[in-house]
Image 1 (cartoon, rainbow, N blue to C red):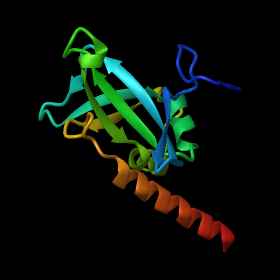
Image 2: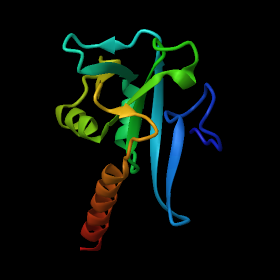
Image 3: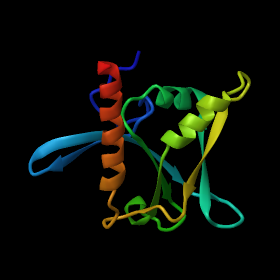
Length: 147
């Protein structure tokens, strides 16, 4: 069992950040983020997405999560300081559903996720529409539970 107050360090349980959104001084939503820094990111031939490999055990852990999970790739090849590097993101729930429906062979050790180059994460990135969609799905789940 992994119980942590902080999400940083080498012994994390699979998440690097917990993000809470605040609207008018009220905490509204929470989601998790996994940051992967790569000095030589794997860009596909069409240059449309990066490949990010995660351990099967981590993917299984994410599949049990109830909060949205944002996979963030930091392209460390861009600049010497990580704070100056480009960030790209992908919500991984659709991929998790695809993986869950197909299943993972017992011998498989890793799963590859694709992070679109178009999903650049910077100061102008607005994730509020995505977060609202996750909130709506959670409310539907609550309603189904009531039924």
